[in-house]
Length: 295
Image (cartoon, rainbow, N blue to C red; front, side):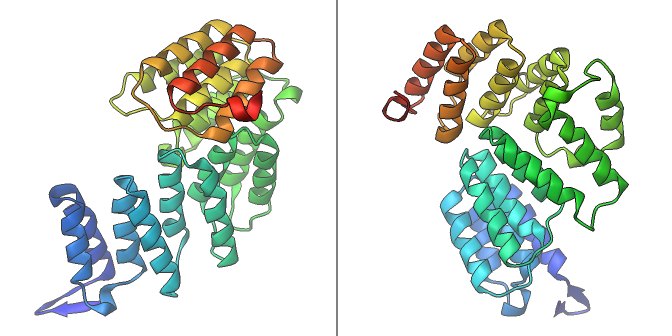
């Protein structure tokens, strides 16, 4: 905390100013403000605030450089710093890097929070690593920091993972459970789509997807992979074709190569040969040619 005349400015105050400066004046102003702070004010909170600004602007290189500097500083970090990096990697389509951040968090013995777990699970779902999702859920279950709310959350997610053993797909248990989980806990709508796919709730998936495409938010390849995977799981050939057409018409150019390859294989495995061809052409159009690895 630094004294300014008759009042003291806390670390949180500095952090808020960095975020506000980014929004009002841009990243450059926020950087200059951070660099001008006294050494005692360059704390976990202010470093993380600048990292948040970089991540929000998808300035991957700058975020990674700052992340390394933060690690070298030997400051005591919370899950928030790692979550910022995970969120950025999800948003720019570098999903495979999420697990590396989790590994670093664990090496430093930092306790993960619900955002950490949700981002981690979402990254695994985006790359179709369903077995790993189950392992993460088991870890959550034995985390002493979780209470009854977390238990309900885990049970809800397990419905998707063990979809083959589902017996109450027509129940409204998910709808009721959603009311008990705050919106703040749902990091991505992708994750919600996956849960509904596990329950066989096609109508709800349709509603969520329609809402998403009506927003001004630019879709990423992760969003398209998620909805395609869900419709594929439910055997909805018509909807698969519609989403492929939407992706073709979009300006989205980022690609999660490993996930795209797995999804292409999945199309072939379930006999959607024509759609597999369409999807392969789409990947080539989006500069993600899978030919060398898949044929």
